[in-house]
Length: 259
Image 1 (tube, rainbow, N blue to C red):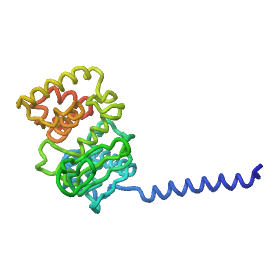
Image 2 (image 1 turned 180 degrees about the vertical axis):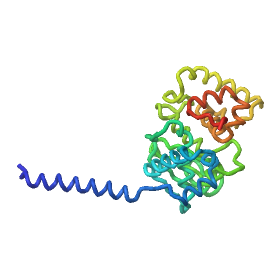
Image 3 (image 1 turned 120 degrees about the horizontal axis):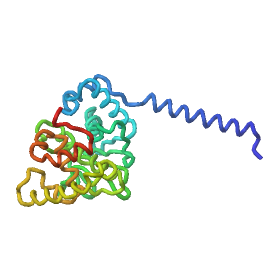
Image 4 (image 1 turned 90 degrees about the vertical axis):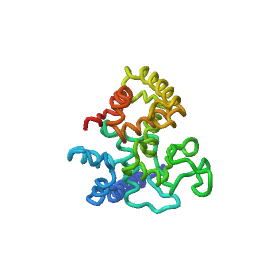
C-alpha cells in the first residue's frame, strides 16, 4: 500500500504542473493589439465595415481562434498578416453565431503556393489552392498563401479560398460534407435549398449564371462557392440571386447586403 504522504505529494505535484501549464498558456496567449488592428483595417474589408462594438467582438473571436488552432508555415516563414487572414477566414462565416469552436480542426498548414494531391508545392500539375484534410490528415487544413492573400485583395471579386474551406468545415460539423448544414440551416429552408442548388447548377451548366462553374462539382462545393460570393460581394449576390441570398443570410445569421 502506498503511504498517504506519497499520494499527497503526487497529487500536489500534479496540481502544480496543471497550474503552471495554464499560466504558461495564458502568458503566451495571442492578443489583438494596435499593430494587428492596423493590418485588419488595411487588408480586411469585412472588418472595415464593422462598428466599434462589432470590431471588438470580431477581435475577441480572432483571439479565441488563434489561441485554439495551430498555424504553421510549410516551406515559408509566416508574416504577421498570414495568421490574421486565416483567423478572419474562420471568423467571418461564424460571426453571426457568437462563439463557435471548430471542433474538427486542430491546425492549419500554410503552403507558399498551389499544391497537388501529393502535397507538393513545386513543379507542374499544381492546381489545389486549399483543402480540408481527411483520413490521416483529419483535423488539418492546408491553404496556399498566394490564394489566401488573393482572397482578401481588392481584386478578389467573388472568390475567397480560405473562407471556402472554412465553410466546408461548417458543412462537415453535422457529420456529412454534403452542402446541407443541417445543424445551422433553418429546417424550413432545407428542402427549398436542395431544389435551389440543382436549379442553379442547371443555369451554370447552360451559361446563365455568374456563379463560379466550380460550384457544379457537387452540392458541397456549391455551398462553399456561393458562400464565398455571399461574403465577398453580398450586395451583388442579393441582387442577382435573392433566393439563395435569403437562405444563406438565415443560415449564417448575417444580412451583409444591408450594412
